[in-house]
Image (cartoon, rainbow, N blue to C red):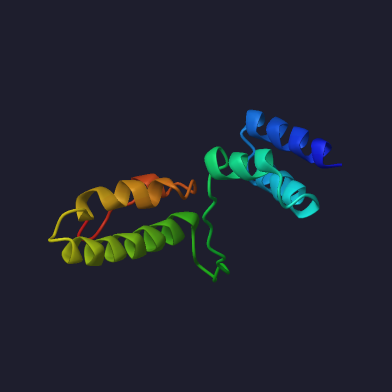
Length: 112
């Protein structure tokens, strides 16, 4: 059973199905908490998946939701940049928006 989950997880990784791979490796660990392969693969090869639940309101578009989310990331990055001596806010839009995959990579940051 554990070997089957490990195999399915590896196949999912080859296809780029990160969420599916994560489920299989976590299932392997649930069956065998000391499984080194499942643990190390989760740690080293399975990417962390970030998502936010949002209920779409009337009149919202995908672009408006992405713009709002990118603005929130940029505001947080500005605060982090200020704490670090003002550096870092310029690159935050690219890294914060790029993880979304919902068209937010072209969203403008503050003042844009």
